Image (cartoon, rainbow, N blue to C red; front, side, top):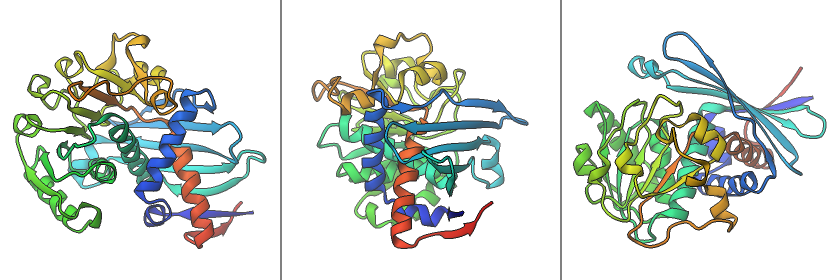
Amino acid sequence: MTVRLLRAADVLVACPMSDAIDAVAAGFAALSTGQATVPVRLSVQLRGDAVALAMPAALTGASCYSVKVVTVAPSNAAAGRPVVIGTVLLGDALTGELLALIDGTALTALRTGAAGGVAARELSRADASRAALFGAGAQARTQLLALAAVRSIREVRVVTRDPAHAAALGDWAAREPALSGVALRPATADAAVADADVVLTATTSRTPVFRGARLPDGVHVTAVGSFTPDGRELDDDTLRGARLVVDQRSAALAEAGELQGKRPDELVELGEIIAGRAAGRSDDRQRTVFKSVGNAIQDLVVAARAFERARELGIGREVVFP
């Protein structure tokens, strides 16, 4: 038996952001219409502030299943190491045989960015052009790429704890063809959100990163950084009166610090909106919030898309295993 190894560069070639956005949209719709089997992920505390997560997923009628093992170690940032490190196993849904071993760090950033892109496409105003971005790491970069794929963004105000991180983000963006014509500028939190059309948060902060009272009418907020009940990037003012959208209701209520105490009927799944089972934005003055804790269906659909395309193009390396 052969197994295809897909490294980070392979994933990005085999599944560009536009493809990932379409795959994740279909995955969310399947999740919200009962076609996916996605248990709440298993979490194991490691040393210090690190945590390991196991995330399996299967889809009715699909040829593949997936299991991702991912670690999140916030203290890695100070040492220049990736905060999120993962590996995705893609297998045959009929025989159980392993098909691919995929760099889960790159895939996690890609599929999380794609989820933000789906949310922006469904929930932000069609004329959105100004964004506020909190964070400058891998997750922030894919959020920005996904937003640029679905909206004509012209200005991004970047908020980071370290000015060097914002400068590095600017250098990276200048080399990205998809961000040509997008101006990135460092800003304070208040200035960044004051007239933003879209706000993106992709940080390791355990406390709110901006004051919701400063948000303008009609803004869309996507928050992807926090994923534990005792952590949050958004304050209560941000959530108050907003249309609250999540990736999966049960997981969000169990894991999102921002949503502790919320009732299930106060939340709408993004897949329900995509499938036409729930409304998205009601008007241009409504605030919308997409809170994502990540879902294994995203890993499955993006991994499957990357694997199929890589096989067609001969991308990656095939090895005999076991």
